[in-house]
Length: 291
Image (cartoon, rainbow, N blue to C red; front, side, top):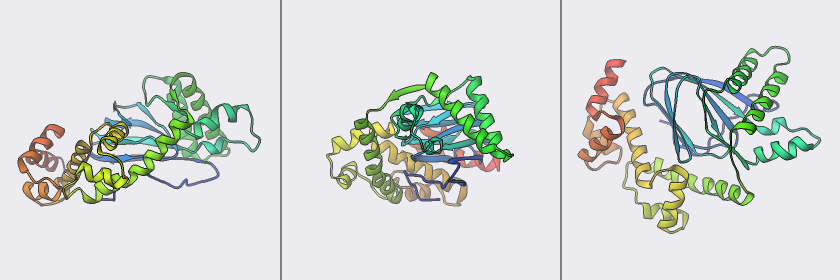
């Protein structure tokens, strides 16, 4: 499994265009994007299957034609609820919409968007206009016909107008924005540490010491960012690893529990069943029958 990173960077295939669109598929039930963030805004457009998307402290159930807006610098994760999940990821670097001549549109809308001072509502459903321009953006980008760059840029402008008119969640002050980005960068150390050390005992007090802050302050910020306590988050990572070993290895349940950092087999089994609605043994049997 790849190392867990909270900051994710994917190079734009055409840096002069400033947009990247690709289809995420072969997402079987239980497969996840672990919590991460990036500087560009993204749209997830679901074309098949169901998933849970978590943005900051909120969790959303998605289905076909659901659209999820991932704001700049927003911690988010995804878990597939289907064996046939497919969705497009549209990544937008707002700077490609800028002109060399600073005008009213750029000052009033594009700059605050690029600086993450405007946040949009995450889940969008049953909006034919948004759906129309999302589909148009994807079609033009993938067709590569003459002038597709202009068509893509035009469609993105239309999407931004619709989002501004109907889906603004809040305006962030510069102070709030600086605090948000600073915390994301600081806590990258914590998320990386957890992923590297999930097999060992992890104490909240030790995590707080890494950032040189009090345990109370650490827990408050951590809950604000992830919607979970440090213990729940660590257990979530361990359960995610357990799913991998149940599907991909011949290790028995006890070996998997110990390998994933659980020193109590009963606790591991109770936690696993609470999260996945199956015991580890039943989960393995069910997934092996689906292969």
